[in-house]
Image (cartoon, rainbow, N blue to C red; front, side, top):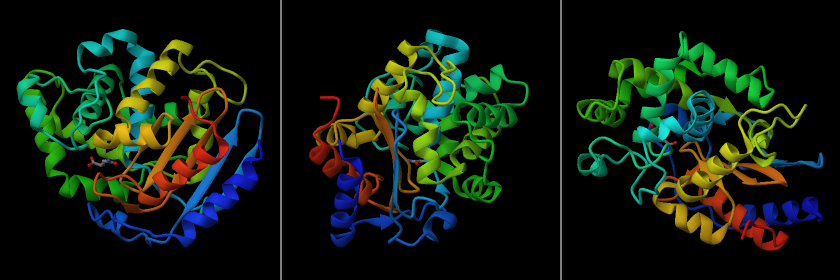
Length: 304
Ligand code: GLN
């Protein structure tokens, strides 16, 4: 498979096409990014690495970090975590409150904000020093010691994250948050604030392409079954109410963030990080989705 030729061709086509949507204005730090930024990086299990465009510029990974927190909680507690949240697509926006009332505070899945907050609560109850231990875990599984939180972005989210505060308090009213809401949201805002490049993103997620083992050294991060299940949840819930569309067009497990990043995984083959800050109405990167759609079409490789 000539990945390099296909990536170059698709990248150039997408760059010369439309760039629809809006850069997220959720916090000023996200709004600052130029809409024209566009980077792609692929790392394959047979040691191929291909980067294009702004693949070495850091951006805020936002909701992509929810995959790391799920990985850590799942590793520590196993199937027990599913007593506190589900694995069903919500069909609602990432920050929606609506289903929680009828679902009695049990979020539909770990990738909507409600579910990610419950995962944060689980980790806080398990860890002595949640922020430091979570960062150490992410550094270890990604093999990247340089990763860190952006205190500036975390503070900015804290100052404006009213919906997340509402979600956390609402879930607590049903008894599905054990810790103080301000502690849970502080941890959540920190994990969303991690900054990475497309290259780092693509390498970080190789454990999900590699059956739950680290790429360098084949050390188990999670079991093969857990890796399969996390990929399955990414497939069905990774893009909120656009998860069906992403599956339909791209056909790979993936996760997006409102910083404009997307990680997509071909289990057994590769992991690809894409970044373009203009978001569509569902909060997913317009060019990122377009690129991946054309990439899996031209390679004729998807999991389907
Ligand atoms: N920090 C963002 C929020 O909580 C993450 C959302 C996202 O990336 N979709 O609203």
